[in-house]
Length: 200
Image 1 (cartoon, rainbow, N blue to C red):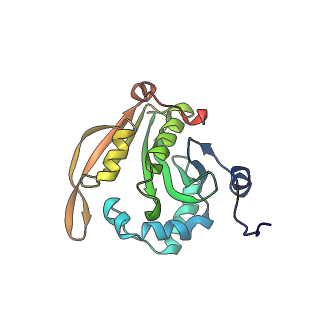
Image 2: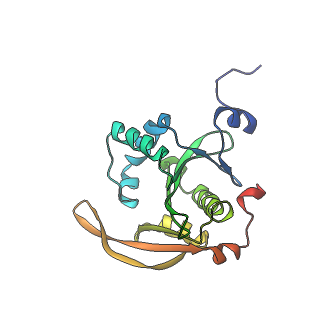
Image 3: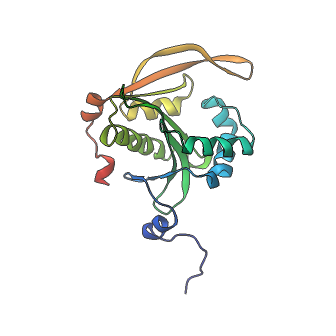
């Protein structure tokens, strides 16, 4: 006899609870909804996230309003990162999409308790597979603090090439920080020897 906890017990149940927009090897991407605002707010308020990502925690109401605005913005796609059992582990987005130039920017933030588990690489891989496999992108860029060693490792593992450094581009706690600038081009993505998201 099992207790009904209301929590999805298998992948099929998880999909029934939340529609998966894009699937990868170990994670799924579901479109961000205003109901996710409180969860995203808690992740953005984490001290490590504010330092490493260079974000300033905003009020919950402001974040909810931003999610509502972003829903109507055709130049971006925002996703909640979910494990097969439906557990949310992070946030990912393709922003500043230009269909004319074939360019976009990748964003990624993991929940504190799910960092270091390989979900960052899986998520970034899924995001670039979406950009190059379903969208007409030729170039995807990403930025992070030069001291954010975990993000630097994830970007490199996903095939991104470091182009350079934006010096003193970010202010945090009264100090200027450099940003590492990365990019991944379509031919580089095509040359990657790994399963694509649609092979999951």
